[in-house]
Length: 80
Image 1: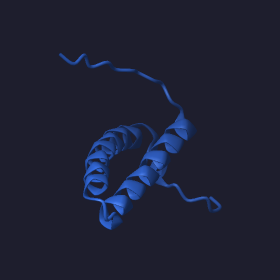
Image 2: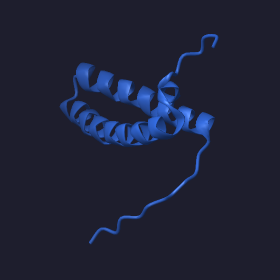
Image 3: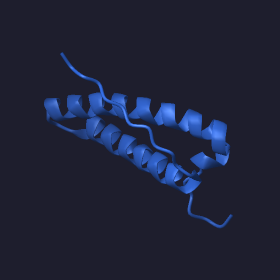
């Protein structure tokens, strides 16, 4: 039997943005591995991990937009 554990964390806007940006970059990394790897197992693992990470990203980003607004998903480093 698997015991599922959870953690609840309170984050401010910049902490949330850093986590979302990290998840976004990890999704891109996993997608690239899935598309380019010649190792079937590696490609499959990356694809499965992408699905899990993208689910977490979608869950966090939708809640973050509700609280902080759409700009929370702007990961650009340009001038505001």
